[in-house]
Image 1 (spheres, rainbow, N blue to C red):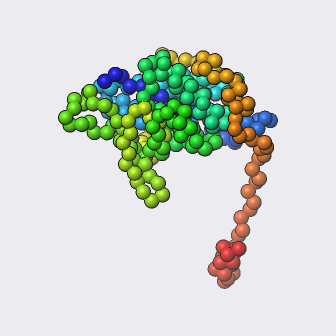
Image 2: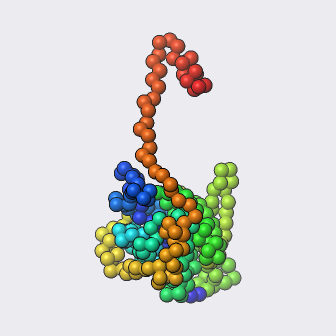
Image 3: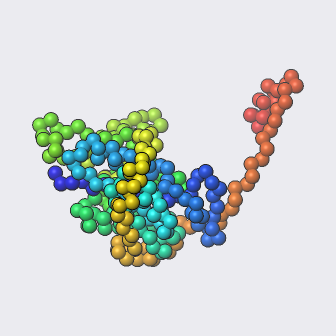
Length: 274
């Protein structure tokens, strides 16, 4: 079986521990940004798959879209698990909605596939920690014509056919995913897009050796022209939705304090009823 290629989508997002603000054009201020915490889970999933079946020679690529500082997300991904990174950095991308972003990612993945003999697997977090739409995985699978499994709580190789040689067996993945009242077991073949929840694993912390090794791994910048997209297809021009206004969240009002003067229970009931 030929070597496998996996692309893990990573995003540079505002640090959730810091104050968030909007720019004058209603875009999110991303000056103080880090790798999205939820993107560490698909990176760990990819690393675990590679370690479980080294004979499949799985190569992991990290892919991000954003301004120059977004390269920080790729560099952190290289420290965790990725073998190489790709960064779509083009001013025209600014202001893209989820669909326009999915279009950029799809074209970038196709470009990576052309350069490296195809892409078999795309892994994402269950959402980004800025917009939290969870829309991109499904849109991306549709654009790529890949199978789709969302919100996987676990991911592993499906057991190989006992009658086939393990190294030559066609690779499939076994996943579990949970809904409100049901846990599903799913087997999916390649190519596939899979979003991974924060219950799927415990992301590894890069050690000193991994951090130093990451400095030698390549990060390839890409423009829209290189992946075959025009500026009118992305950004504000290509968006299907737009933010018309943004304002600071109102300060929290002081809560109601009930003092027990023998009738606290009644006051609490009245408060809850109201």
